[in-house]
Image (cartoon, rainbow, N blue to C red; front, side):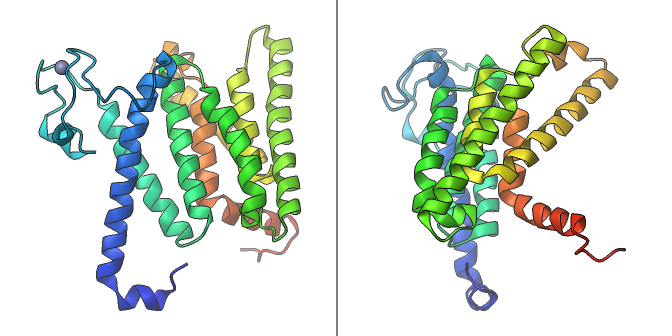
Amino acid sequence: MLDAQTIEATPAAMHFITLFVLFFGACIGSYLNVCIYRIPREESTVRPRSHCPGCGQLIAWYDNIPLLSWIVLRAKCRHCGGRISPRYILVEALVAILFLLVWIQYGLSPKTPVYWLMMGGLVLGTFVDLEHMIIPDRVSLGGLAAGLLLSPLIPSLHGKSAWLDALIASAIGAALGGGLLYGVGVLGKMAFKKDAMGLGDVKLLAGLGAFLGWQAVLFIVMVSSFIGAFVGMGFIVAKKHEWQSRIPYGPYIALAAMIWILWGPQVWHWYSALLSGGAPMP
Ligand SMILES: [Zn+2]
């Protein structure tokens, strides 16, 4: 991490890095937009080059600049005037902000690129799930494989120094993540006679456990159900009851995981200190 002195010494350099991280995040967001559209349609995410889904015209590089082009074109295709979904600028801005938050939190740590990768995967999974009610295996199982592979390479992901300890922590996280949600799903099916949990959610949480460990799994299950209940109540209050059933569970898991990546370890330390009586009483 950059220490305070370095930051004070070179504010111009820090502004440049901030802008660069935002721009880098927006570019990744731009690519994720392509993935969000193409992966559920089983198209290649590399070829052919981006084209308008309305008129099929190739999109020129100057119309494909993250954030700016959507605003300059006022959300319309230059050729056919067809509407460009606000999802494009939303995903670009969201990934840019998430990349910056990870950078602010972890700086020059090997965790930073790993958490950038995870943020990208979670945004991809969220937007595909919202539109198609599936989480692509590329995100969930790909995440599981990447988590098991990266954990021994970067043991600090699990707060360990030995690769084997980190691999064990990763495997425990994956097993708890998959097992816990699978159990919830089986119980839910017995209780409500319908699928409470999709297999995609089970695979996603297993993947998150592989990266983040078992504490994160408990946090994510708890926080995602809180957020889900909160949003559900919001829809009931707003009398949009039919919306509630249309929102899949994956985005709540993703949101809880993002909160854990950015602030979870602090919350966990505070909570366990509180439980063991270590925290000062107010
Ligand atoms: Zn067009």
